Image 1 (cartoon, rainbow, N blue to C red):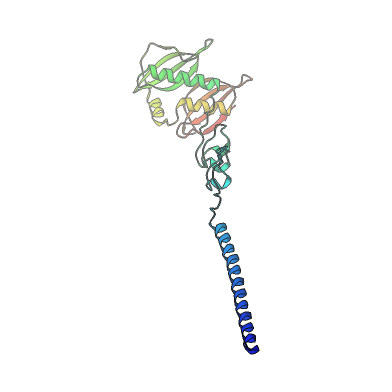
Image 2: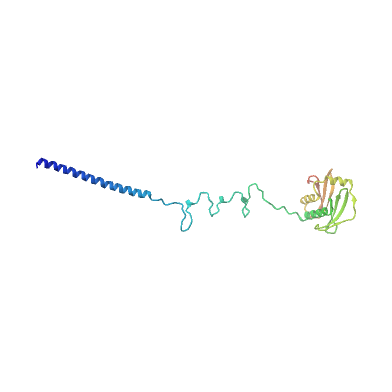
Length: 245
């Protein structure tokens, strides 16, 4: 073989070797790339750990498991409806503008006794309207006069109003008294309350009268010093017309 031919063969062999080496290098790189892709695929395909699930051991949910705005076991201010009454009856417990229920003021002992006597007398005499009351001398009780139509009836009432004793007599009610009775808008017992608010004391008596042209209840009150004080109460509106000491 000629020297030139040997040289050509050597060059050819070197070229083939280079091609083989280049091929092996590409295959290894491809393998590493494939392996990296496989690894990335495995990492991305793994399922994410769920959040907000209940703890199997305790059954309690994580904070994210509780819906926003859901009431918890602790009583927060927002858990109680606005205006709902609470057991302690605090001012904020009552609905706004509602009105709260209050006890009526207690009537004084003297006024209560008079009211009891008036009510007992009017219940005992059908259709009767009390127009005069007097404390009985030396006894605990009341003498009460009632207008029944154009007639006048009298009864005795015990101090506590539990007993009513009719008295004899059925007299004609005079014209002046009939006219006064017809004008009464404020009952005698209310006039007595007004007078006892004006003058501290005990009731001696009350009757219809006329003062400066105005029909009034003349209420006679004995103050703590024993002085008699007359309080004149308008029968139409309950105002105090005059106090005569």
